[in-house]
Amino acid sequence: MGMTMTQKILARHAGLDWVVPGQLVEGKLDLVLGNDITTPVAIAEFNKAGLTQVFDREKIALVLDHYTPCKDIKAAQLCAAVREFAKKFSITHFYDVGCMGVEHALLPEQGLTAPGECMIGADSHTCTYGAVNMFSTGVGSTDMAAGMATGLAWFRIPAAIKVTLKGKLQPYVSGKDVILHLIGTIGVDGALYKSLEFAGQGVSALSMDDRFTIANMAIEAGAKNGIFPVDDKTRSYLEGRVSRAWEAVEPDPDAEYEREVVIDLDRLEPTVALPHLPSNTRAVGQAAGVHIDQVVIGSCTNGRLDDLRQAAAVLKDRKVASGVRCIVIPATQQITLKAMEEGLIQTFIEAGCAVSTPTCGPCLGGHMGVLSDGERAISTTNRNFVGRMGPVSSEIILANPAVAAASAVAGCVADPRKL
Amino acid sequence: MKVYKYGSNVDTDVIIPARYLNAPDEKSLASHCMEDIDADFAGTVEPGDIVVAGANFGCGSSREHAPLALKACGVKCVIAPSFARIFYRNAINIGFPIMECAQAAEEIQAGDKVSVDFATGVIADETSGKTYQAAPFPAFVSGIIDSGGLLKSLKARGAAK
Image (cartoon, rainbow over all chains, first blue to last red; front, side, top):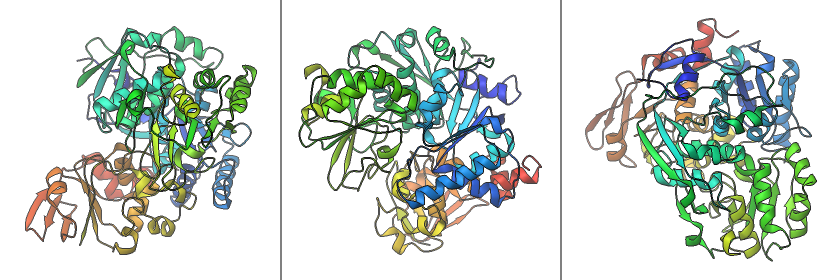
């Protein structure tokens, strides 16, 4: 029996020719990531264990993105601890306010992620980099501390679900709808402990930004990771970003999958996930008219240039409805600059949106758009759990950027095709 | 010790809401633990109490603050049919016991007095008189737990300096 893409990468990094699902291996890491919430806990563990060395200062990325620019004194103290650690160990890839972005948009942009490589990140959405054929998975702070010290992490080789994509996405339908549809189909623990291996002719029709969005939310199906094969679009994306040599992986023809899910992209509708689970999905039409108080367009899921373009296309020459607050957060400084060049930022501001510097902010109820009692947001973020963006009585509806923008204009959940 | 019982997909946002992650000290985490799913939890939980829940416990964010908060409350262990994988790793890595047992998770009721034996994996519900067998950890994972957590196990074999 052959191996999947994920199994091949883990085997390679464990120095093994062969691995099977369930096997526990120790893998060498090409990168270890942390942010301003998880890194301080990792630093505390690192220090408590009496560790004094990092395995490779060039293979650690620290991104201050969650509560930044710092929302309060405590958040500032957390950032200060990370800053001090980065300085002490001369960490090459330390991103502070001014050059930081939302980590999972920033790292690929900076060329830190490449096909066939293996990384862990103390952030659950670290699975994003499967879009460039990398094995990447979220871990906690102790794993991060151990990874920084040793360059190693333990992994249970995951079984796999094959997700075969057919056809091509229709206008106003994007990668977000693909992943929401998948989560709605298999459930929030449908891929628990497993990898999602994307395949099929439909992959080539997806933009890189769509693939990042899809891989990003693999965790919302419980998956260890989600991974795409490399094609011309991947190679083109990597050109000028990644200068080191990389070796992509393809699945063996006889790789074993526990199940296969086929998604016909042509037939996908703009999809929303209603409160309070990402699996609670509906075609947007079924939720149309539901009142909203706030719109968030951004995050590691949907804060990339394509996302902003889709939102701006809807908001162009239109106004955000009275009584609705629309917050747009380009995920990185480069994305912000490009959005300015293309006139997207002007479109947003003329429509009555607030445009922010990069931050994870509202996605986790941190800052820059926290909800009040009983309020409801439609958001391009990734989780609609109870209390995620505000008090327990607040609600989140997850959607793609075009649906979020259309809803901002309509003042209620709206289908961009019918605006 | 007494049992707190919750449903499926208890996410880390309700175990410890993000608004409290700016203060990751144990005392603060413990005082807000489970606040968004059970406002009475932090005020009534006692050392040795047990949390029993449905499938996919600890889904969502990778925040290690979640098992740290439960541990800081004195929770002895969590029993569930399955755990979200990052929570599972985090619990093992910090030495916080979790037990996978679908039948126990379904049958044990809130308020029951339950005792657990981590060495054998036996869960005993003293209220109902029933006993259950949790799935054993793989030897590799047991090794981490026995060493007192991941970093101690790495130091013990000289992999971390």
